[in-house]
Amino acid sequence: MDPHKLNDGTEVTIPLRNLVTIVIAVVLATSAYFSTQSRIQAIEQEMAKTAIVRDMNTEFRIRWPRGELGALPADARQDMLIEGLERKIEEVSQAPSRAQPDVDRLSVRFEALTERVARLEESFEKNKGSAE
Image (tube, rainbow, N blue to C red):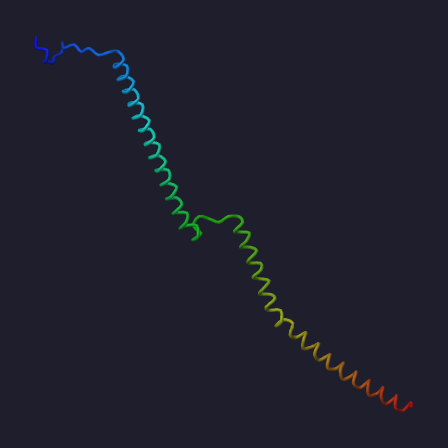
């Protein structure tokens, strides 16, 4: 038999320490491969979730201002308060035109009272002058 020929009957001798080292190296390499593979898979899943959230955020960002997704209760309350303030401003801005007839009536009364006071002063002055 030729010592340089390999076949199914060829014997290999290796020290036990080297064989244990090779087995440990294979186990560590396999463990590292599967750890890396699971980490890659977890990162891919996280990226998929992030993409879904990003797409939902984009949809929300576009549709919320349009009012297509409803409104918060606080927004509805704030809208009611704003509408109430608008009505009060409208009332206040119309108040001078509604009060104008009263102002005219008071102005006429004031003029009449002013004339009366002037006549009374004249009368008082005449009475004072005739009593002296």
